[in-house]
Image 1 (cartoon, rainbow, N blue to C red):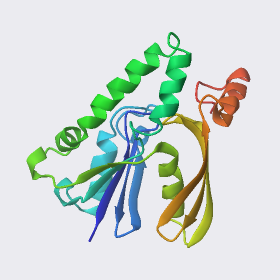
Image 2: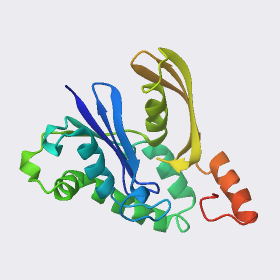
Image 3: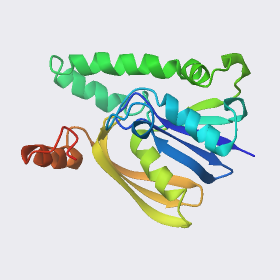
Image 4: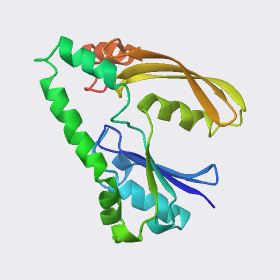
Length: 201
């Protein structure tokens, strides 16, 4: 039996899910449990505990932890943008570095949330590029053997949209749309203009 704990952490809409032998067995957003704050960011402590409890497994049994963020993805594009706009991106650089540090401590954070010793855990942490994680979560949970993959939102790992060819157990990225060209930010801007909150809903 292969257990994969998927998490969205330190980013809006913190959440957790559990996949057992390729089947999604539990998923929940942190906002539905402890915090009750819409689009809560941070670490999904209660969501992790909930999905493990729903499946009746312990953190020590998890084989992989997948996080939908890869600090090393698209570094060249990020560096070009920072060099072009050094003053306006300074805050973003510090935010990126702080998030990178928090993700590097993910094993300890998970162990603390589940009240176990980090030494008792055997899982491997896998960082998945943001939009690739969106496409993978849709395709691999679908009944299709072959499909077109498309993901767009505000921004994730410096990409605002991704197109991919999905077949079998592979996803081949065909194109990325780079930040700041964002259909998601355009949608959010229109929604904010007509009175919705900062996430446009």
